Image 1 (cartoon, rainbow, N blue to C red):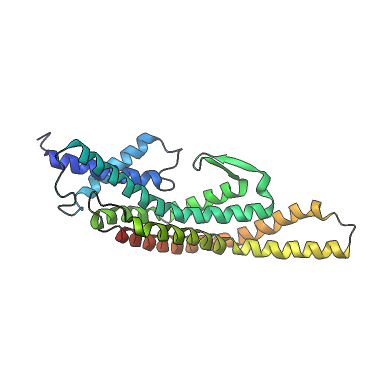
Image 2: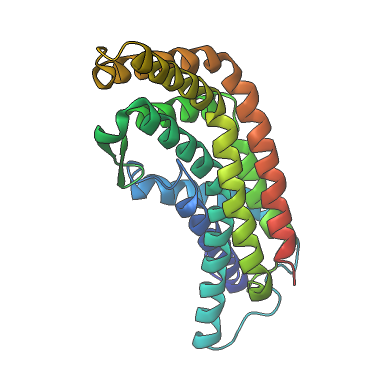
Length: 260
């Protein structure tokens, strides 16, 4: 007994913390680099304490008596957490891809910024759109979807469950296809408007060859793209809520697929 707690309780809490930390590390916003590691650790500890009373009895089963089996158990918990967090990040990857498509067509392909949360270079439009969607995400309390998914992992997946290798490849293929589908749905209004604008510029160049189409294309593309984008902003909250509701279903299905 340590401070009135049995060794099994302490080890169970440690395994809960490890899985939660792995999920948070892979999730967007929670795992972004600007958030200090101390904050992530505190959030993981708080969630571990909060979830421990709701985790089914016998979640761990029999504790390994040796160090090597216990280390393998920890590695499995980390792999489960990273995989579930990866599924949760796919929802934001589709949003970022949509912004990249729009930004490239609007002429922002040469104006890249380094976004600390992404550890990569993206266009100025992509960085702006990511900030808008993150504000909507937090304002609508959609992060509760991820917290619910974390709790579901403990209700459905026992400690030390192995990832089903046979179903991983079909899942990755379907997940990649889903990213493209979400990206095209979100980017469609801007892309369609830009197609019409570019077609009109092409007709104008044919009709009046003296026009400097290359000089006019950037301001016109920027104006048309931003006009349509601003017009679509009032619909973003409803779309985001529906999108992450579907994302929650996908996460739960993924968790159920991990059940041995």
